[in-house]
Image 1: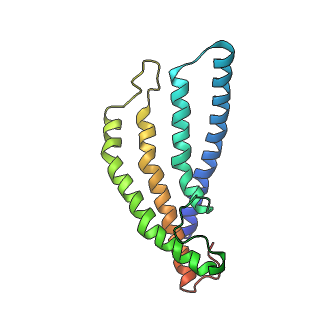
Image 2: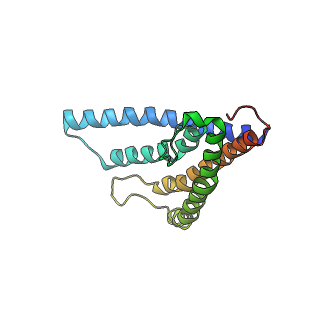
Image 3: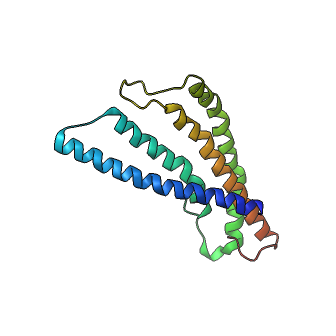
Amino acid sequence: MRPLSWIDRISEWSGRLVAWLVLLLAVLVGIDVALRALFSFSRVWINELEWHLFGLIILLGAAWTLRHDGHVRVDLLGRYRWAGERFAAWRDLIGHLVLLLPLCGVVIYASWDWVVSAWTFAERSPYPDGLPYRFLLKAAIPLGFALLALQAVAESVRDLRFLLGYSEVRR
């Protein structure tokens, strides 16, 4: 299997996982709202689980979103349709190499000691009825950014292949 398709498969897998997490989060929020409204019942662990699922959705879904060109961008040059695919390939290639990949590297590097510390001490919620495995969520930070960096590399290779004439289509 070629490296690009291997990376794409990982992103697709994370996207499928995120789809299930979104469904789980929607059900959990619905139950939480109903319990609060009908029975004035609430637990800290339910709220924490909602936030943890939301964090996982964002972190693990970023690579899939990049793969499917779904990220919202502040594009200084605009999405000039008249400029064509070559302009878009240059824009994306430069954006990935100059902005996205360095950002992923900084986040992975900056979060590493924090994650190791959370694992070392088996960090848990500060609340008595909170979730006991907070360190697992923290581990998703470098994992999510590593997945995003891998997908950025794959997209950059595709753009470069297109710009060099080895491929007739960008994606």
